[in-house]
Image (cartoon, rainbow, N blue to C red):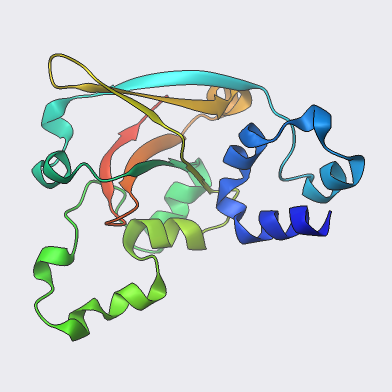
Length: 177
C-alpha cells in the first residue's frame, strides 16, 4: 500500500494511464484504498483522430520523436494562459543552442510545454502514453488512445496535444476528441 501511494505521488500526471494499466480485480483492498480517489477503476473508450501530414512540422517528420498525449482540461487552458505557455506546435530549442551554457535548461529534466504540464495540477493536465500511431497511405496518420468515457462525454473544452518527450514541445494540436 505504501508503494502504491508512492507511485501515485511520483506520477500525479499519469493517473489516467495508471488506472488503465492496473488489473483491479487482483489488487488487495489496501492497495486500492491507497490509490483512491485519484487512481480508480474507470470505464475506458478507445478514440482515434487523424493528423494531416501537412500539420506535422518537418523536424518531427524527419526525427520521429516519441510522443505522448498531453490531455488538457478547461482549467489547464486557463493555467497555460496565466503562465504564458502557448499550447501550439513549436520548434525544439536545440537549433538555437550554440554554447554549453545555453543547455543549462537540461538540468531541470523537463522544460517547455511538457515542463509546464508536469508542474500544473493533475486535475488540469494528464499525460498519456501508450498511443497507437498508424501511418496511412496518403501520409496522414491516425492516433488511437484510450480515454475515460466520462472525459469524452462530459469533458467539454478539453483537448489533446501530441507532445515530443525528447524535445518537450507540442508537435500537433489541439485535437478535440
